[in-house]
Image (cartoon, rainbow, N blue to C red; front, side, top):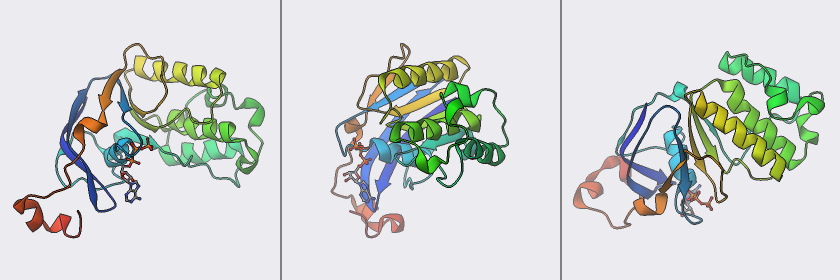
Length: 208
Ligand SMILES: Nc1ncnc2c1ncn2[C@@H]1O[C@H](COP(=O)(O)OP(=O)(O)OP(=O)(O)O)[C@@H](O)[C@H]1O
């Protein structure tokens, strides 16, 4: 259902990862590991189409994916409920029970600007649910969540995968999903010298 073949990933103009390959089926969860700066965010951004890939192939279309990064995509001037309604309009999807799933019922009428960091993160994660998309790309999704909400989010992830969805997650924490596989992105660190072919590649002019 999702195949990544020999993918190179750039950040700025620097090649960070080279030759990333993996295949995931419906229901799979892949945890990205690696030390700070290894390229986990870079890989997620490349899969999401936010960073260029000079080489390699990805089997999925952009409309199959939803990405949530360090910034929560929350509109601060809108209330919690208005944010959800806004996203429902964007994704043309009306999921049931998003407020409850992310423990946002009591915050529905609060302007997002007034939420705590963890509450805002929960609202940002609710966008995944609203999107209805099959492949979730998650960059440190549990940052700022307390233990209870990490457990609730893990249940949401499990339900997504049980329903045939796919999740790719960058995290330094353990996420209790029994079926999760691990990819150490440090195994794909790009060498920083360049071949003659790369020197001649106009896409990489200026990259190092
Ligand atoms: N905007 C940028 N421009 C150029 N290089 C960047 C940029 N952002 C990050 N980098 C560099 O790209 C490399 C990969 O960074 P990336 O954010 O993908 O790592 P990470 O594995 O997600 O790290 P962390 O665990 O700290 O979140 C690092 O060397 C980093 O310094």
